[in-house]
Amino acid sequence: MNRRYRKTIIAGNWKMNKTLTETRAFADEIRPLLGKPKWCEVVLCVPYVNIPAAIRYFKDTRIAIGAENCHYEASGAYTGEVTAEMLKEVGVKYVIIGHSERRQYYNETDFTVNKKVHAALEAGLHPIVCVGESLEQRELGITSELIAYQVKAALAGVAAEQVRRIVIAYEPIWAIGTGKTATAEQAGEVCEEIRAVVRKLYGARVARAVTIQYGGSMNAKNAAELLAQPDVDGGLIGGASLKPADFVQIVNAANQE
Ligand code: PGA
Image (cartoon, rainbow, N blue to C red):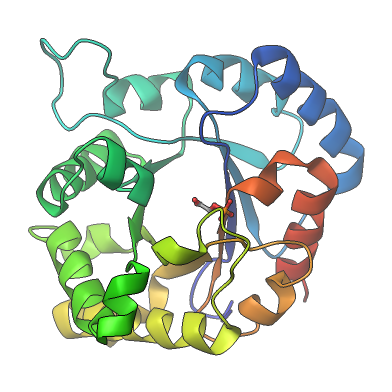
């Protein structure tokens, strides 16, 4: 983390978990545990259908609500989809874009990711753009090139003053939901490379202002070590964000003065 130049952000990604009742129970449970984290922003990205209620439930906490996806068009015949503008209007602040599960199961590509980044920015949301390599790609030794390509593709056509509003999440696919975390050095190395790509594209001032998260089996035990890396400015957390006590411990690890 480097708080002098950029925000630390801990974001939960609930994926396809928790009903409305469970969302309310989570809010009630986390409220007394969380307090008022001063040094980091806290976000929960929840299923679409629970967003308006979640915004009410978490109103008196420091937790902002995010979405897990959005469509890139402003309106139209796209049955089952939701626009960035719709999310903005109900009070959403962040939106995850290009999560590897969406790339894998819903044909999300670098091209659609880029279109969604533009749509989210246009609507005034903060995109959390996910990039990451598979185990095969890591073993082939092409992680750096692949991540650089994904970052460049996601940011294509984005103006420098908009880039500061983007969060980039480095999520090695082999670490997601597997209990296998990247080592702090691996996470730190790739996050540093991501910042170098942003620096090449937009210069040093923009690069040092961008929040870069690590995601992939981050938990209460390993969070502090991962966050100690200078270029790891937070986490995108799946499994451990479903349990209030675990999530609070991660927030506490990020909230050190
Ligand atoms: P995980 O998920 O923490 O359960 O590995 C992270 C993510 O998919 O964002």
